[in-house]
Image 1 (cartoon, rainbow, N blue to C red):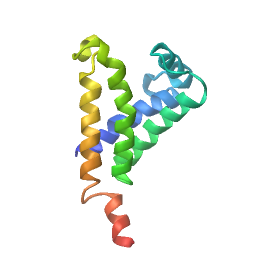
Image 2: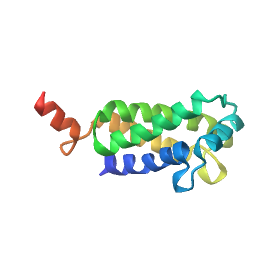
Image 3: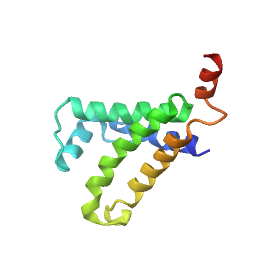
Length: 127
């Protein structure tokens, strides 16, 4: 259940950054957000990060390459945690509480893998 929820929540956020779906900023808006936080907003970075979030969310949801995908997504979310640290703990003030919780969920998925009901398991059985 945690894997489905984790991937299911991560995927639309990535699609929002990548394509502007679900009220997301799209690549142009995401580039502006990155620039606001001091990251370079050059074309490759917003696209790369949006693809990482979208594809890792899909992979976690489908449980294919779950460990690697969840670890990569946790690394992506770690940047959000670092950006939020100066604002304190509570998310309602822009703090790190919420992204840290998601990073820990993703690290748990990276440690646990896809589980019995996963494409990872089917892939291992075929190999």
